[in-house]
Length: 102
Image (cartoon, rainbow, N blue to C red; front, side):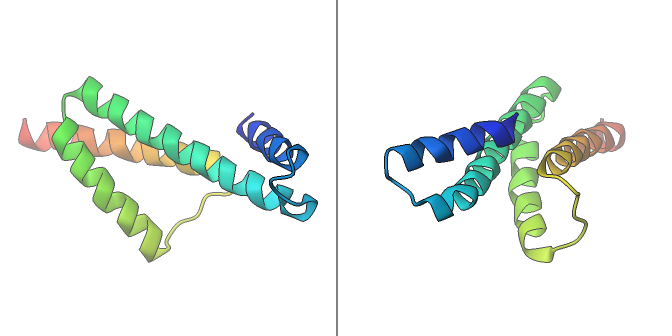
């Protein structure tokens, strides 16, 4: 679904002569990445609000994002799996924090 939306957006840009035909896949890839990043941020905020750990989880998310970006590490086969694994990690962090500190 996200891939199709990204591809449609790229074709709209092509139809308005804003990108070349050769750049459609490139643009769709970046749209897809952007959409998934926005969804990830929204899910993080929702998790933080629901669990009542907004400040701590936001600080964790900033450092976790930087660590993932520069350290390499585990790579999922799809970006959606990466997003789901990130959400599971956030829930795990909240659960550990609650078990240890509360």
